[in-house]
Length: 94
Image (cartoon, rainbow, N blue to C red; front, side, top):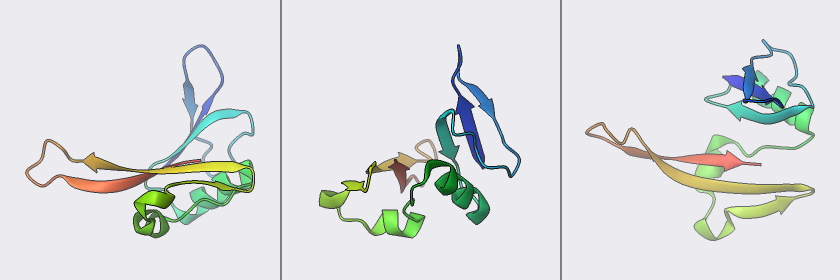
């Protein structure tokens, strides 16, 4: 799901419904995005995002890097912490 948050008093979320997110968006959140949503975010921001597989495979020492003008940080966080089987997943910040 792609949700773009616009500049405003409180962060006002809007879902562009398949459209390219506004270049005025303050934050673009991609939660389990489709390939089309990833392409829309990449086009709006003029950057290339690492795939989930690439993010999982990146070594700890290379999780902070610059790709042209984009600073990228990949963090590994624990999810499902209240379940009997917690797991780890990567989160990418660009």
